[in-house]
Length: 214
Length: 133
Image 1 (cartoon, each protein chain N blue to C red):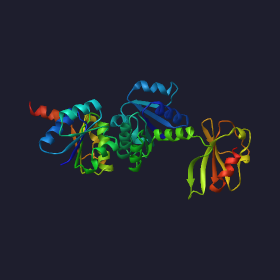
Image 2: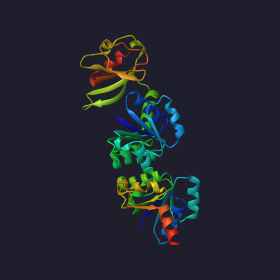
Image 3: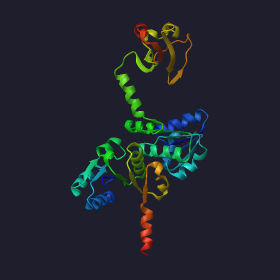
Image 4: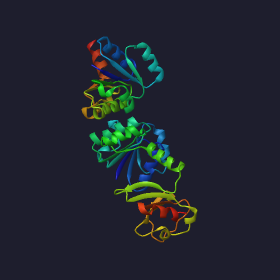
């Protein structure tokens, strides 16, 4: 895909490198040319100096042929205006804006602009880590009969297999996040320390799952 | 006519003064706390709300649900555009006017962005200067 990243901070720079690694054609826009040093000398994408919602900068970045645009500068206002310009004026098919302010993020989401609030994610995750319980419910499926939960691997499970943590029809391991990558494990996959385990569990079996987790 | 002015700089303050002299109730939103204090002193008849005009909570505190008009006149075009969008799309304000700081951005101040009237200050000044020639 042809993608434009507006804002070359930690998030924009990291996103750009990641997207190039996965084979996308990436153009990064930032008002400060020094910001591009974050991309590293081996960066294969293009860079454009300019303000994200400036028509000339967007045209130079190839907005008319772009498949997607992410607006991730440090300013919520710049991100929102850039994303709306990209979508409403240049009709970029996929647009997303990073918005720090959770309330604003909600409003724009309701207005049809996809937003990512790193603040909200951060708050949720920090609260989970501070108030650690073995089972963090991630989502509730149907009318709550099945929960998706996640847990850090307890020491008792390290070296054991997915089959040991499976109760057919009641507890299933859906995915494992290991060193930043998430995959679907087979029944024979072996848990390692620091794995984050994602499970589906029926609400009637959650007590049994807690026991399995020791 | 109830008016909310976002941005209490020289333009915002002058606009507030003019409208108040015609008897309109005015609320000014100003993000710099020290400058908000100055405005409270200089415009005793106006309501001055300290906060960022792009923050929906601040707009609500300023009474945006009851206002007839919003004028977004800060020195940052992206701020003015966010104010116009929120005023129109989130709060259904009847009439929304905005200041264009950088003429390059004038094309963005459209009804889709919530802006009924865009005042392009550089263009206005240039025309006035030419008229004076």
